[in-house]
Amino acid sequence: MKQFLEASKSRIVIVTYVLLFCMFCFFSLMDLHKRTSDYAYFANKINSFIQHAHDSEAEYLCSRLVNYVSTIAKEKHFAELLKAGDAKALEKAAEPVFYDFGKRYVPVISVLIYDGNGKLKYHMTPPSIEHDPESLRPNVSKDVFATKKYTYGYETNLVPLYFCTVLPVRDARSEVVGTIEIGVDLSFFHYNLKWFLHDVKTAIFSDGKFLEVDTGYKTDSAEYVYDYYKRLKANDAAFFNQIKKQIDFRWTKNDIQIGNKYYLVSTSQVLRDNAGREVGKYLVAYDMTELRNRHWGYFYAWLLFFAITACVMLCINLVGFRKYERIITDQSKMLSQRSKQCALGEMLGHIGHQWRQPLYNLSLIVQNIGLQNQFGKLDDAMLNKQITQANQNIEYMSNIIDDWRSLLMSGSSRTLIELQSSVERAIAMVAPVMEQSRVTIENRITAPVYTMGFVNDLVQLTINVLLNARDQLSMLQGDRFILLSSSEEAEGVVTVTFQDNGGGIPDHLLKRIFEPYVTTKDKADGTGLGLYLCHQIVDNLDHGKVWAENRSFELHGETRYGACICLQFARTTEGGK
Image 1: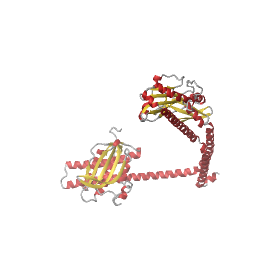
Image 2: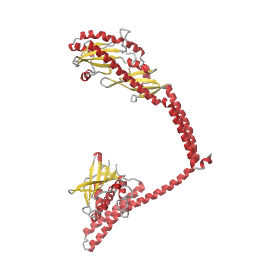
Image 3: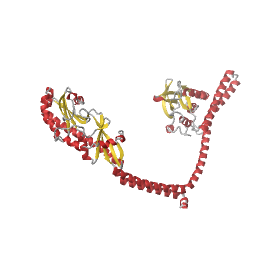
Image 4: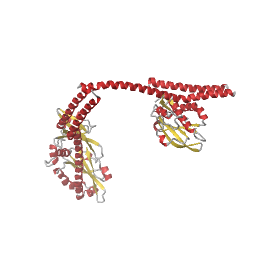
């Protein structure tokens, strides 16, 4: 077997991919076959069903109450009685009707009628509910008077929590002259959910605690249907009290284990009052033990198969690929050596490109000293000026070597650099060349702006851009200008523009101008590394970005057109923060 695997690389690849394909097919078929019983999918479905069942029942119950009570109010002339302020007549008309509520399907526990001034005119509650009629105040009447529409929600006016529907009482001119509040016992929702889901446990969590099963109030007649509801509803307070600390109300569903049982506890249904404020949550616990056991059974089977396959693949890797690891290691060493050589050659090319201009400046300085001496115009001031310029170029060349040595020896070594002084330094270094080419530099960068980069980053970038612009302007007849400006945008982003009037960059090169060896000049005149170096430098700046475009600009009262190199970076305070 060992000889078979080491015979060729193709055999190892084939065996490996055959095993991977088999594992993939097995897992895919198993997952497809058992997807209908996936635990998470089913849990989400149950959670969504519970929420929709509660919302639909609440809306349906409210609609029934509104239609029924509105018809009664119209037939019994509640509006006229409220306007007349005749509480006794209102009670005489309402008592027989609302007393009959107790025998109906909906477990109504209270009916409160208020006039237009918010004064209680009629109330019907079970005798066992202790309350002071004077303390009952309408909670949502103002909204009903304003909107002239019914509303519903969960309130705490009579008992710790009940479902409250409020509808307006309108007169013949459709003006709201009062409101009717109808309170429904919460057992209605517990009982109705039993019709949809079998063997569920329900509870209502409000004010930091679970509402108990027995609220303590009773009625005088056994015919009141909510007594029947109270015997059937299953809020299972004892069950929820033992898992109270395990329920995280930040999640819409919780997976909780009790012994060997697993329950899905839905907390997604938020109970809100008529004003939309949260007053509690409707909790439903569903036994997911059987489904969970099936789900994890399939998972363990797949895990076992995966473990066996992984062990086989590990053996193949240890036996078969050991030979090819040695080959790959040797090839990696060769590639690493060649990469270092290429990087060194590229670095030398960059240094040579950066040194060319300072050397040319030094040559011009030497020639100028000779000419001034030949004509007898070389004095101490002229000599000192030429020596200063020569020293600046020599210092710049020395700094370039230091920067590259720093990059080679210790990686990135960034510091705080300043835009204005860097630009002025670069202009001074290329000034002789610009004067010789009759190029005028208009520098409008007058404010100090700091960012992070290498010491000569902005100097080097400015020189490269100016020299590229000078090469293009040398082919132009007439005035030759380069305009430098900067602006600060929101969030500390600085944009620097280098604009010339050289006619612009050809459209087919505009997007590729920062690629290496791309140049608008003849191959004998340019290397195509100037703007490429600019792009490399910008990567060292904070949030650096550079692009090129052709556009017109105003200078000295005339409209000019040419290429514009745009530099963008993040501004840093002088303290480096």
